[in-house]
Image (tube, rainbow, N blue to C red; front, side):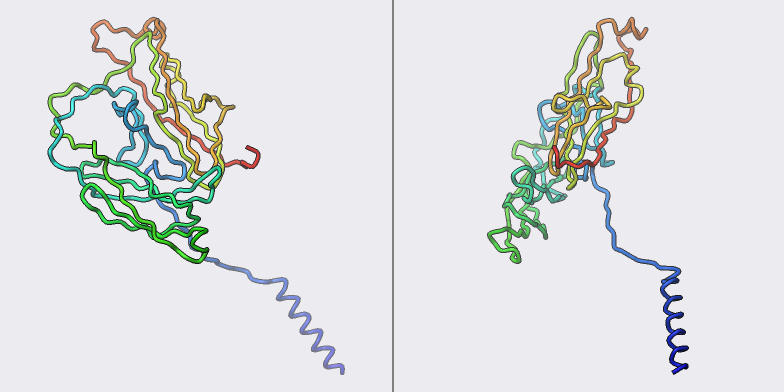
Length: 297
């Protein structure tokens, strides 16, 4: 009996040591994914107005993937329309999610790139799908025929249905020939004027979070002598106390206004005796987004 007592004490002692030490070193490996994309398909996406209001391309997404703003751009003379038919050479698709009354809706935003680098975006058919996957396409000249799998309430949660359709480069788009003799393409603002670029850029929340968005003007713009406002939905985004709130999937347009005082030359002591003078300013325009609890919005 005595030996059993000693054995039990020894087992308890060993158990106590093991519980205290647990382990001295551990490595846990977990899969993780990330990717770099153009700004207009990012989680916090920035894109530009197309057509009237941006014909001078004051706003564009460049090959570096970022949105660029250049308010100096103006008249340019393109070549005559080419007889060569535009064709699709690249396709990218980005899953989209609904908001408001249809927060579970899913579909794809598809961007076509033609052989001169022009980009055109369109939406696939919206089927109130709760899930989408396996996007496929075939290029047919200036169009693509696409298909993907979607899971809907009517198809049953464990069944997938095929969604198909066709997206094309707009019929009105034609390639331009070689540019002819053109002007510089860079102009500017004049004293005693106000320039408004209404709804020039768009910010979109592609995350599941609710975010508050604000903006910061480039350093040096305050010394330009102009009154500059950056607004969205009537709110001044450059006011540190002001933000706009975007739920998942929501977008907002940004308007830029430049007001140049009548006496700008006197104020800045910068004059135009020959007409060749110009006084540029530049910098980095920043969009800030902060995730918030949107339950009370």
